[in-house]
Image 1: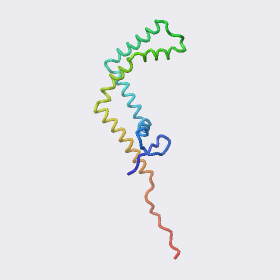
Image 2 (image 1 turned 90 degrees about the vertical axis):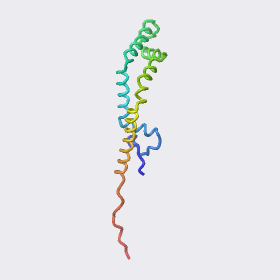
Image 3 (image 1 turned 45 degrees about the horizontal axis):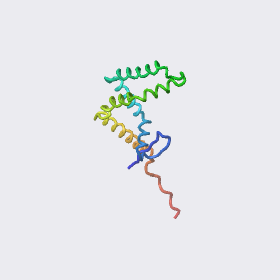
Image 4 (image 1 turned 180 degrees about the vertical axis):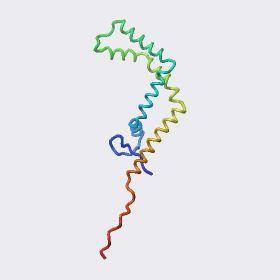
Length: 141
């Protein structure tokens, strides 16, 4: 059996643990595809507008309270304020749980991972030289 290798990491090492498979998955572009699909699913969800409105309310309250030091820290402080509330975690959980649990999602993920391994195995078999068919050196006797 030919061991799959992680060529996209800049080395020729066999995929022998999940971290190497994840790295190959990310380098294949499948991770970005998945991320975009999850984002589109979230943006098209029923709760997206309510989520945006809640975030806007949190930011507006913070700005109106006058508790912000300066524009230099504005972004950092607003992120901290939003993180105090479970708004983001709740929205992410609500919008992704169904998708991540679906048979279709799991089948597509499994297919992508199997394809990555299969393609790598095929590259490995092409890279191996064929068995030597060179004639042996003539005997001097």
